[in-house]
Image (cartoon, rainbow, N blue to C red; front, side):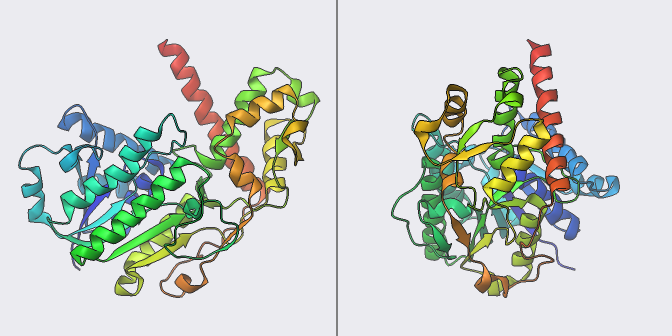
Length: 383
């Protein structure tokens, strides 16, 4: 059995931690060099181990597997936003002894506002270029770039797995991920290194355990709704929140384990999947109406009234409208992410067909709320 060297960014993030665990659980001789920020090498090592341990607990990874995985992760203290990845002198030369690497680039800033534009570009565009410029000369077997299905921007209807630039973007996050994709294709093309662009939908918790280690996208929206309910007493238990959304629009939520199983299947298929774009999306995603109904019921709120006019918002609803500026375009657009061409190229247990029933979604929300409330209590205690 061959032994491969992996280079992973974002291993301390939501998708990256789940991906790191599964890559090393399936490929039991591989080693993963994980780029991690830290005050010193010891701090970086502790941060990586703590994140992977938490993710293993969330996804029911057996204790023996975790012990084995932690033996084969190598923290590389650095920073994607700095030239040369901010590595210590000689670190790149030392890494060359383990090349060529299969790169999994999942580190990113999820911010979207004009105020955060410099940070977004630094992480998602400059950071991607820093990684390419540092590692390609060292030796890369394949470069896997985790993007987003919503890089299609304002386009609606059927979305194909292509690299075309949309006519416009909903936010700076989408725009930055598009430019990151172009950098990968350009740099890898000139270096003759195979690449893949992996575009997940809106990643949610594990489809079996119902747990997650990060709460953005839809689960982040639910936490904002919970915070609004907490801040308005029992108001939303007596009157419905008004929310600007299309009831029939599909929100492409996809469990993190489905995203990861597709990543491994794509990688295992080798040359057949190289130099291609892949939608890691849900072919059985729910509608806004269903998600809003389940969310409100789980939080003990009145059913949410989905409306089509911003002028119909009452003051509390207008506040939530402002809080959810990032999520707003996804509640109003209608997109169907095609994956029929690429699905035939690699093995996968589900190929993204992940129906989500009410019991599972309620469990995901309850678990997320428990984590969030524990974090809030911890912050209050520290203060």
